[in-house]
Length: 310
Figure 1 (cartoon, rainbow, N blue to C red):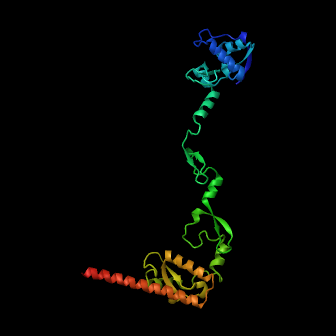
Figure 2 (spheres, helix red, strand yellow):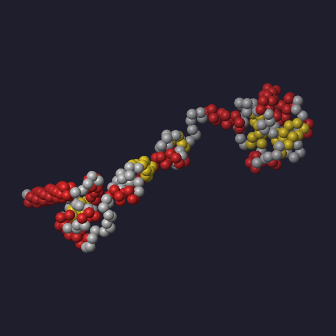
Figure 3 (spheres, rainbow, N blue to C red):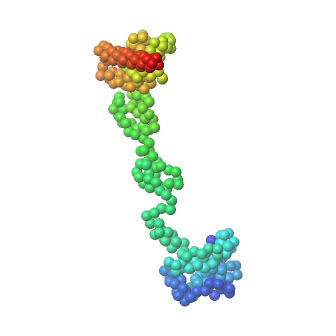
């Protein structure tokens, strides 16, 4: 938008102008120009006819000005050209400003911004939610849960202590499922292997392991601790990496849940040394549980048969 300065005498007022300005209004516009300057130029056509800004021209004459800033209608926006322009008076500051004919604003743009700020003080136009980490309010329509990337990092990560080297490390909370003994407990794979395999690491379970495993499950088709018949695994009472023993005496079926728990306890025991006494204790404890579970299963089956007979 190009602003040009024109002599007041060169401007031609519109003869059919419907808006008239009283002396008090002209004085109010003059006071606004004196305090804030020319916020809105006079709108004219190519021949110098005033389209909008009659009150500003009268105020300029009252102030004794010879020139006024003007803008040609051809330089205005397409919507202004299409809908036409008119003079409007601001209710707050008294300044005259140009607006579209199809609108009826009561304040100028500057006062409208100030008025909106005062009206919305302490409130928000859109609903707000709290950041999950720091509690800062953020717009709900954005679909965010955190106010910044830093808050998201703090929320989704957790600081843990490595069980082997005792060093601290960060891990995603989503990985802390608890499904494995290594979940969130070790800072690296090497620490996990050093903690778990204090002897040399052994891959595999020896020859014909699949056949041996099936025979163990066929002999005792239930978990030695809870008696379930689902998701069974064959556990080495004494780890295979220590003894390479795949005999029936060293094998016992356990469900996935209790297999994990027994492995965790065994590793904790091994941390303080694992000699013949510990081996005998583990043999006796697990076999005793297995026999107790077997007796309970038989009692339940006998009771069901008796009820059916009655």
